[in-house]
Length: 234
Image (cartoon, rainbow, N blue to C red; front, side):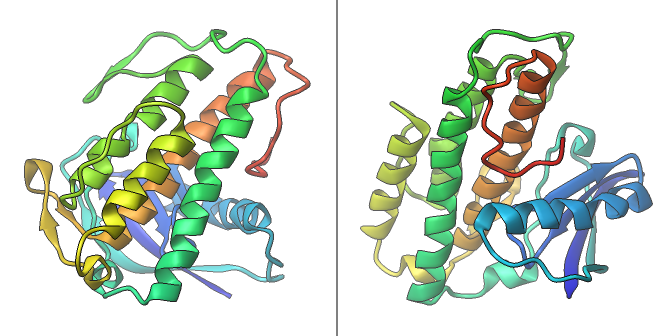
């Protein structure tokens, strides 16, 4: 099976997205390093969604985009051509269910970590401020993009309560918008282009970034109770 890969990069620093597995990604200091990781990432993703994994996974780069953003810090502004297409009702419901599963599993992972303020990571700043270092900081950071992502396609949302609660309210607000499945292209913050498909992919991607960091940090703290709900490799 082909993994349709989108390669976004700033110089050599690279992000690879698996276009046909929305939210699955790998990073590396160059294209080849990032590509070498994507098959294992997709296997993890397929295990997470509960599907059968093909024996052979072949990464194929179908799109390249150079970026001026801090790719090293997981920033991104690419809009896939496929993300401009309208959504059918069944496509939307399937992707929405996956995004809500991701939120619920993120909550489950967070709840399983005994010491939510533990960290051995050094303090570091990026374009969006200090990098979240503890499980609590990662949880708050991931939850708090809810109103930002929905807002980029003109939907008023919030980030109050749990990650599941605020995301559910965001979808309810989205579904009150007439023609929301048309996948209109919006010019959001800083001139970045957004569609509903992109928002759904970005939720899954952003959850995975911080769930992976949270899980690995918890393992380093010898927290035997931590749940590998996303099926990350150790």
